[in-house]
Image 1 (cartoon, rainbow, N blue to C red):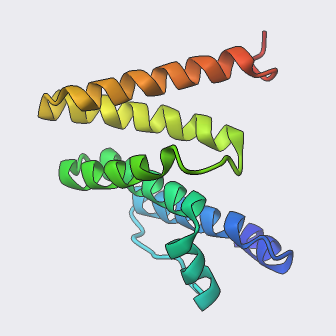
Image 2: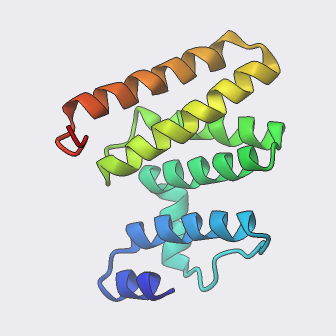
Length: 142
């Protein structure tokens, strides 16, 4: 809550929106199905118009659905997430590495359950993205 207030005070609404939906996923995972509180009209507009926020939102929803083994929801949110992958510029590169990891897990799980080759290929692309990120990052603890 303190971080959300800090970001709001500094007019960093995009990061605040990302934090809210990450927080919502955590609450759901610990058994508290709470939705973000105090979503202003401006924040609602950001969610519906900003592709980076929509990307993060769909990634978080896909991950939470995956954790609860909700196949249809995982597939739905993963497909929505994939709609934004190529059209969004990074707001946090580390965030993209985390999303690639989680979407790789989800893609391989969907491939195993559906036997669709496309999901396996998406999982492989995520593995390659992580490998490229690790090779190019100075933070790989070499």
